[in-house]
Image (cartoon, rainbow, N blue to C red; front, side, top):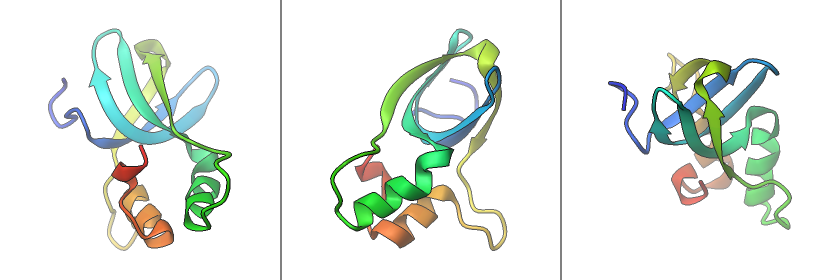
Length: 102
């Protein structure tokens, strides 16, 4: 693992070709790529609301491998000043920690 990005960290991945963003649990990080379990950020709010309302699962996390050439940036999911992290936003909507669902 690369320093600061331990297995089990909650991360945001920015990808290129095509441009996509994912939020989830980092499973491994190597010279070959990134393995994570998560959801596309475009679906994050819908996923949290679905769980909060106990709706039929329509969106759920997937385990994926992304080759390193597609990875533009990796961020730890951390609050920034008054802006909540995605994990904190999830907890405020669902009422349970995001780690229980990824």
